[in-house]
Amino acid sequence: THADIAAILNDSSGGSGPSPINEGDDLETIIERRLSEAISLIDVSALKDLQAKFIPLLERPLLKLVLARCKNNQIQAATALGINRNTLRKRLRELGLKDG
View 1: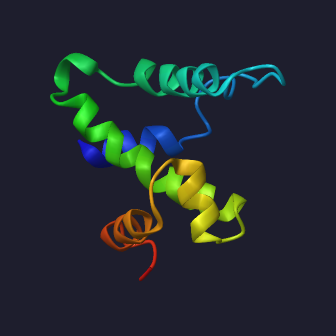
View 2: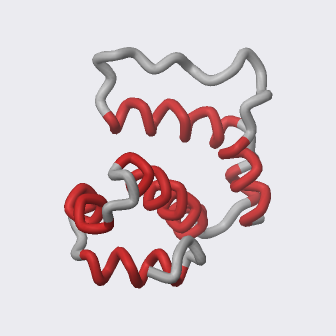
View 3: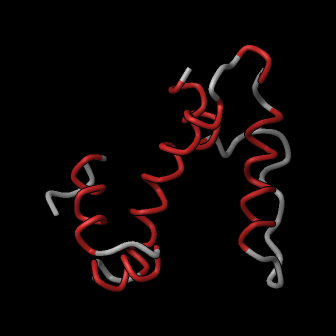
């Protein structure tokens, strides 16, 4: 379920811990490692529409973390995300992160 996937992505107690992130790792490599850990803990054959379930789960923390990194400057965050500020504000409202 949606909640199961969220719990897996947020679980930091599994096994020997997350794979280390090396200084030279690119973003795709880092994301692939984390997703690999999450996927290995679930029975993918029992799930349907996995991509449709993961994308919203990734968008919320992405927007939150980019905004925090940009010190809540929505113009900077929107530029970093490759969207315009109005789109960012709309998504923040839709995801219940801010009134925008």
